[in-house]
Image (cartoon, rainbow, N blue to C red; front, side):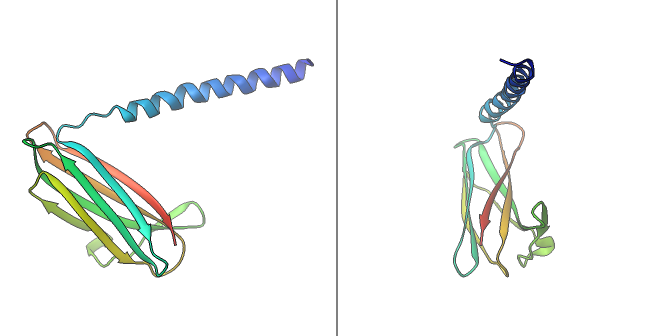
Length: 145
């Protein structure tokens, strides 16, 4: 093997190993997060052919611990491939909020999209209870219309 090719292969393998040594522990660490007051929190978005965005929100708390679930949701549209701009969803500051004093939360948020493009929905759940400090969970989902 030529010396230049050998150096290139060594450099490529070194960079690959470095990337894997950083990415894998981060993924494993995020999978091991333990919450004080919640078992599960999800966000699933879809958009109809007529431009109706639906966001299915679900929080499963811990019976005997979870006492309150607060929700904040906003929608953004991508422009110029890398930037995001808030979408008018008809709520103050374009942020939809909800709260319940319950163990579980399930709701479907809907809004009409005015034009085609890529949209990102972000939801933040704040789950309070007797299990410890409040859990703040932020999730995003992206759809194309």
